[in-house]
Length: 53
Image (cartoon, rainbow, N blue to C red; front, side):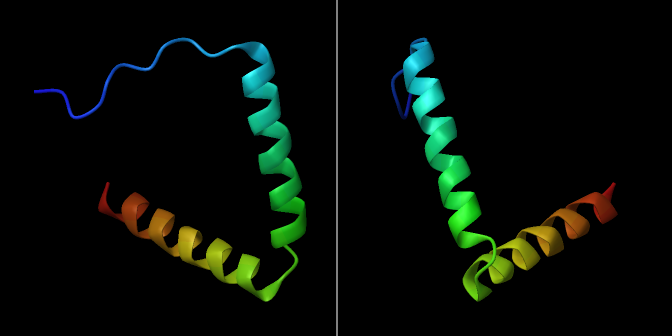
């Protein structure tokens, strides 16, 4: 049973647009306290997961 349909190949323009948006959001959010909290949370999750191995 498929929960979602298979994803087809993306165009290069779509991929470039997504990359540009992610870069802009990263630059805008990272210096803020909210961005730092997200970064710390992801870091803790990664550390926990790597500790399991």
